Length: 506
Image (cartoon, rainbow, N blue to C red):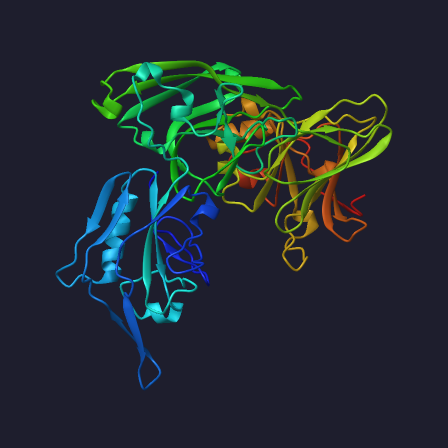
């Protein structure tokens, strides 16, 4: 695991070269263990690093102390040292020692400064300033922090290598390695959701790909796996969770992982993933092994994948993973999608006693290259109901698209009779790359002008909406562009080229 200096300002915190700062409870103390570190080793370094005085005009004057002794810390029996001399300040000496600590796999460094942010800003050599509580003004401390992914176990022959030697999160009961994931990936069935990412976290002693190779291959459920990569990854959270609700706390930084991306699955099926792992030594002498030595593990990383099932009414953020909807029988059902600002789409339908579950997901990203190019120079918004699900209802459902041409003041930016709605009818077959091909796609019905099937106006809540009745959802594009605008000078014989029908939206 390697770290970069990337910190934010905060009161009553400590400065760390590796992780967000920790508060100091007493002189030289650290709260690093509360953030997941397994060991804190204080370094030997001069305490007083600076003196602060106030000038007559009220400005601060900072005088950095020159180091008069060597700074040292011992990690796993290895003594790290930064000698005094050549006018080296204590602050500079602390940073050099921290860099040496950071160079050891599995170890990070933090520097605690005593005083206020304003005091230390006067020292131009310091970029990020934090206050160590209970430390006198101008004092400094350095701590070495052991990461939970570090493992200094001396390994024997490679044929004796175990999954527990390699990975964090070994399940001793099942004799298997756990797959971990970030928030929003787990499902309600002790598994993970499709179209998400899971990780097998590798211990720091195997951080370098130049030392050792890990080849993870699919054994079961391969058609549901999008990709597998051996990479270094940083996470948005310090806590990763496994399917059995076990957690690991990782200090912020970069870790070597086997990263498995899953494909979308638009059914209510549950499937199992299993993998094989081949380990191969790439550096002669690494762990006292020979270059080319290998070890194979079979049927590891068991993980179950399925969509969550939701009953009846529900609200969803656009762009999030799809869900299986189980309609409420003999009831009105309503599904709403929203973004960070407002509701953007809604489906309403009545389901009788003989209803089927269906998968539904809304995306507002221009993922299809050909029609994103087609609408590039226009004001256009896409509403892609992934998989074009058929709604399990006794009659056609009501689809409401909240008018995207409404500004933050809830004012219309275009006239209603200027709006056009297109529906992509055959996304998989479309491969238009020229204006003629685009014109042909419109003319032969693979993309259709369905404007006259929508009613535009206000709903009962006063929202500007576009509504239609449909049995299945698809990909809709709302724009002010006409077919002629989209294909420039190409003549388009587009059928169903009507205007919107101003109305109540109901």
